[in-house]
Image 1: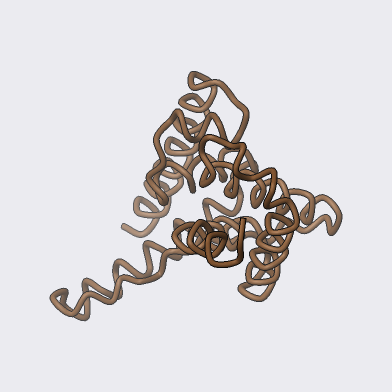
Image 2: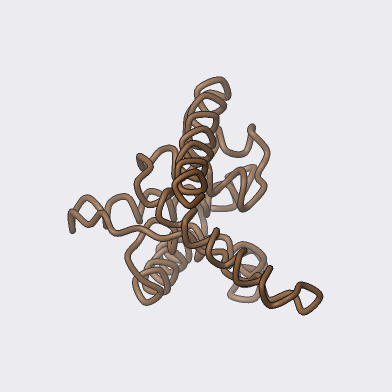
Length: 168
């Protein structure tokens, strides 16, 4: 596999790799480093990559494993959610502030989820992967994925409701 072919494979996936790394790691810098490390790792194994049927799932899986290894080695539980681009000019200023505040609340809740739930939430609800793709990435069966996702969503909903009810 030559350099141009490799870049064509990586390019559409690297943003997803970065967002997953950002979700799991402490900072933008750590996520950027992780993404670069994973791309380098995949480049060094490029002759084996073509053997995988779903290259995107392979790349996301390598990213997930790399980030989890980083977390284990650093014992770092400060985690983040990525999506903060609610800058839609059609929304009024008050509504944008409200959405931003809610996003911050969701970030804090997601930070406290177990790693497995965090990963599945990121892959399904943020990146919109199909369950079969998530199964390939996480090496979990679909029923277990659905249970973990359901628990993550339920926890997020419960915590948001608590926050809203206390605010009244």
